Structures are given as C-alpha cells and as structure tokens.
Length: 223
Image (tube, rainbow, N blue to C red):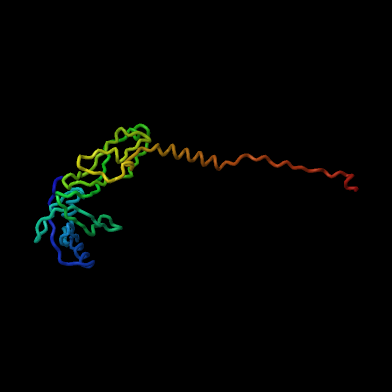
C-alpha cells in the first residue's frame, strides 16, 4: 500500500471551548497516540483534510508530517462527525503503526457488475456486509475488496468464505456471513402476501338459520 503525506500541526490548547474555536477558524482538532508513546494533540486544516479524504481511503498509510515534531507513520483510527450534520467533522484520531507489525482494519467491499438475477428476473440485490475485517501487515492492506456479482442469480448468496484476498491477509469475519444475495422480486412477494391476507379475511359462507315455528291452531287457543 502506498503511503500518503499529510501535513498537520501540534496544538497547545485543549477543552471543548478551544475545540469549537478551532473549528470556527477552519481547523479540526485531532490526536495521535499508540505504541506506548506520548499522545500528541494536533490541528488539521479542514480544507486540506477534506481533500485528503476524497482522494484516499480511511485505511491508507499516512506519513504524518507534524510541524515542530517530525514525521510519524500512522493510520486514521476514527473520524467523528456531527450527529445531525454529517458533513461537519468534529475530531480525528490517528494511531501510530509499525510496518513490521500486523494491524486490524475494516476494508470496504465493492460490488462490480449487475447480477443476472436483477437483469433477467427483476430480483432484488441485498448487500448487508459493506466492510470486511482483516488482519495483516500495513503494507498489505487493500484499499477495497472487489466482488464480481455479474453471474449472481435469484436465491444465490456470496458469503465471506467465497471472497478472494491476497496472501498474508487474515479475514476476521465468520466465513458463513452473507456479503450479498439476490432475493426474489418483491412484487411477487407482495402479491402473494395480499392473496394470503385476502383468504384469511374471507369467512366461510354461513347458511341462514332455519326458522322453526309452529302456527298455533285454533284448538290450542281454545284450550
């Protein structure tokens, strides 16, 4: 994996108020930690960081160029976003890594092609697992895991165990976890459900009860 350079600065201010002031000034508070070394508080230019994220995955190896401190090899551990305005970046965590020690990361899964079950049978593509957890040396981390779904038909499933990864990469997810599948067309399922529901609502025809009466005779009146 290629290493990408990112320029940041050390910061000397702390607390929520100072963090808000940084954001108003166009910077994002951040921190670097890990490998039993000192925690380094950072500030990143927001525009520079957004451009960096657009061009690179969050699993990229970073040469973190810290002004007044030096260069550290790191990866992004977490990016905190505003709970309402997802476009607002609140904080970034970087963790130190060694090129000689394995790391664990979540790699995006990308589906390629249009499944035959969608093209020819109007099936529905299900895609519940969007990331694959892997453990390997930093240099072996892929940017993404590509999965060809062109030949996937209705009622067929691709599991984690069906994926192909490079040698030296350990997949941590359970092998029988479903990555993607083609479900039958929803229209047919809805029609069937409506038919069943309609049958349940119909009640068996009931015959009108026979009215049994006995006309009172004149003789009975006389009694």
